[in-house]
Length: 459
Image (tube, rainbow, N blue to C red; front, top):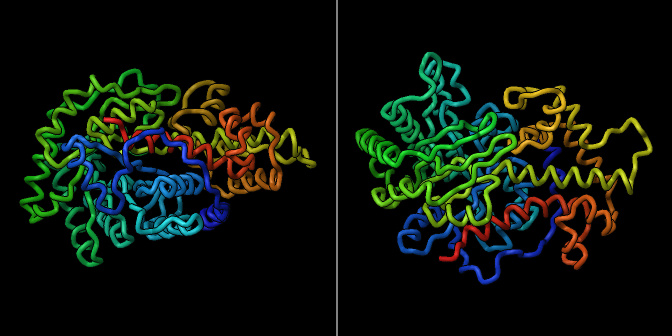
C-alpha cells in the first residue's frame, strides 16, 4: 500500500471547474443508490437517462469524476475490477475495503458526500485464479465477493464465464449460471448481515478484463437470442437455489453492442447494427444491457447507447489516456519554462519508458511490432496499458517532480496553445486557471463532460 498511499497524497488539491454541459439538456436524472433500478423503467417510459461508470483506480480520474458529479448534482459510480482489487490486493495493492476508503478519502478532499457514491465490483468471479482447478478458483471468488459486500459495494457484476484449469476457455450457460448462483448466495448472505441492498449484473462478453489484445477489424454484435438464453438459465438456476427474490435486483446483462477499442483503432457504436439486439429488451422487462466498455465513442454514439438500452456508460482507459496527454503536454511545457538543472533527471515520458521497460508484464503480451512501433504503443496506444504503471512509486515520483517544477507557475498562454491547445480558449477567456495540477484534472473532466451530456439525451 505504500505506492498507493503516496499517490493518493497528490490528491489534496481541490479545484472547482466550469460546468460545460450541453445548453438546454434535459433535467438531471435522479441520484442515490437506487438509481440503477430506475434505468430500465425510465427507458420504458420514454424518458431514458444514463449514468457514467468510472472504471479506474487512478486518483486523478476519481477526483475528476467526483468533481464532475458534484457539479452536476448526480450520483458517482466508481468501479473496480477483480484484477485491480481483491483479497490479495490486485495490481493496485488494495483490498475492497482499502479501495472504499481510498475513494472516500478523495471524496472528502473535494467535498463530495459518501451517500452519493456507488461502488461497483466488476467481473467478480474466478478470473484472477482461473489457472487453478475450478473448485479452488471458486473458493477464492467467494472470499472476494464477501469482501466486496462487506466493504459496501452495491453494484455487483457476477462473471463466472471463464474456464479454469482443464476447462474450455468459454463455459456453457448452465455452468456459468450455477457458479454465478453460488457467488450470489454469498453476496445475499453478507448483504443481509450488513444491511445493504446490492444490485446485480450478469453475463459477459469478450474481451476479458483489460481490453482487446490487438487490432479489431470487426466487432460482432451479440446475437439477440443470447441474452434471452442467459437470463432464462440464470432465472431457473437462481430460483432453484432459493434466490428467486434477488432476481428483482438483477438490473442488467452484459452484451456486445458493437463497440471496442484496440491499440490503434476504435469500433464505434452504430444504432442500426444493434437494432435486433436492443429489440430483445422487449422480452426482458425491467432490464437493460451493459456494454463491456464505451471508451473513445463519439458524443452522438454515447447518447444513442443510452437511448437504445445501454444506459450504464462504462469508461476507463480513455480517461487515463486523456490524463496522460495532459501530463505529457505539461512535461513539454516544463522543459521550456522550468528546465532541469541536473541533466541526469529524466522527463516524465523518459521516466515512464524506463519503468515500462523494467517491468514489461503489463504490456508485453498486448503490443507487437518492431522496437519503434513498440515504443509508440507503450505510450500512445488506445489500449493505454501505461495506466497500470501510474501507481508505481517511480511514476508517482516522476509526476510529483513534474508538478514541483511547475509549482506556483502560471503557464503562459502561448505555451498552452502550443502543447495543450484544447485548453487555450478557456485559459485565454480566464475561465480556467493555467496551473499544472488543474489542467491535468481538467483533461479528464473534458471526457467526463461528454459522458455527462450523453446521460441526459434529448428524446
